[in-house]
View 1: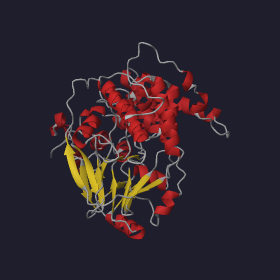
View 2: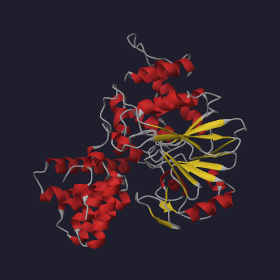
View 3: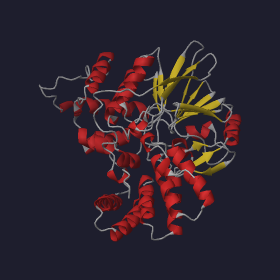
View 4: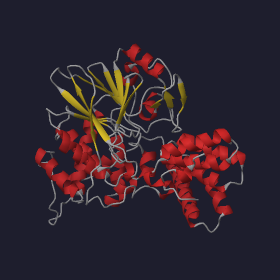
Length: 471
């Protein structure tokens, strides 16, 4: 029987680790260590729901198995269940009082729990004021020694975008006044859009659809190098998860927002599950914005993210969303049009599903491997498409070895545009061309950029709570 010790850890082959531990558990279903180790592999592949279930099973078998508490705490943290995580971290610290890593994570988790309690205590029913109301952008001074890009009369131009990308390429920071100008303008633009954006491609036109970019700025530049800069004749759609994980999320999102302002009708952005406060707190974007700018600027980013549309339909035939389909049948495009999206996503319902769900090979629905929303089968896809007179869906949200995957008899397409995700997955990236003439997806793959300037450690702003150790 092959186990984790014989899996090539250098290649981070977590999928095989899951396979081998599953085989081992079929032979020995009462082994707490196997469940705990498979939980770790699930954590690495972001299957937090499955990781939580395995850690819990390990503790049911052996309530004294300390790694089980540690893995369950990490799973709950990833799911934003901070109180449950804190309870398990307390157990680990009590049993291992000299473990510095466990102590640090307990203190960090405790800090979040107290912060959340404080936020609830001061919350009121009053309409929350926008950060914009407290900004005086006009009177912000751009210092004489700043030689970077500036908006022209307050407007984004092609020249500004080219200069800003070069500036970011050298790991230099855009002046805060310019960043605020972009955010205020893009918030106003996005707020005027519907939750379901509908566009028409003429026969001779094409659009490029990109999946998750996750703060991988140099790979974003590579997409533009391979496929051309956005323009009125070269439209793009970026399908969520622009931020978190990678160390250059600020650079990625300001570049995407800049192009949205430059080409409002030909550059499209949809919200992902990482354009949310809980994810940004855990996976790095909040920390990155605070390190490069201020907490106030992160609050404004949060406001802008809430106005990102949730889905896009092309020629009434192809529906695009970040996550996938729904926890119940009968959802129509009209239901999507009616979603009030200006909020943090709820734990269930169509808005949650659009951001979080995943396809599965078997029919029906099952509990999500992520612990949020659901997994949906080919029959669910078929019924939804038939009811809404659609041909197929395009979604992102999942790392794919080839950068894309076609499932459900061609009716469900996944595209992921962050190659070598987190500098460890070894996957290709991909983008899709859709042409108005036939709307058939045409896939283009690319590999990660080896960039000398890419010196910042990936996940550098991520909370240490989610960094796995060998405990």
